[in-house]
Image (cartoon, rainbow, N blue to C red; front, top):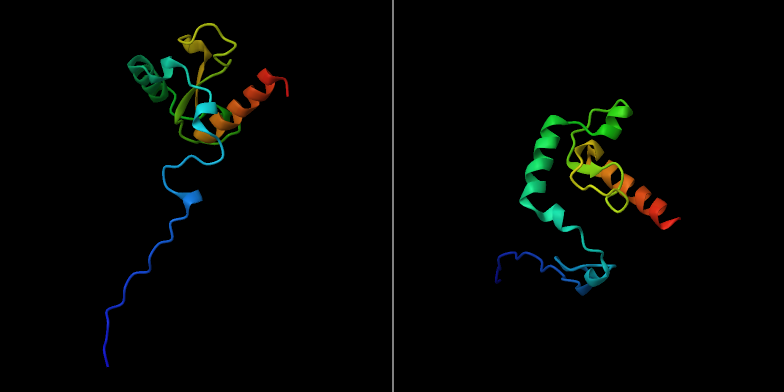
Length: 111
């Protein structure tokens, strides 16, 4: 009687579910973000702003204490002329930022 060591089952790598692959939307069709978001100045100033505003502004209005993760433009940059106007900034959690961004896109696109 020959005994063999158990082996780990092989993972099935499905071509439609590979790591790093973009699903659904093609990257070339995705709108490019503004250059300012990739600058050292934005990284520095948004970090300082979040340190001064550690809680999500929208959640705070609802009475929830949720840490802020991103800096959002209250009036979208597509509409507002000054990217660096800090009176147009608010600190948000990722969930609120996504929801607000989707709402802004619908308003801008007229849907």
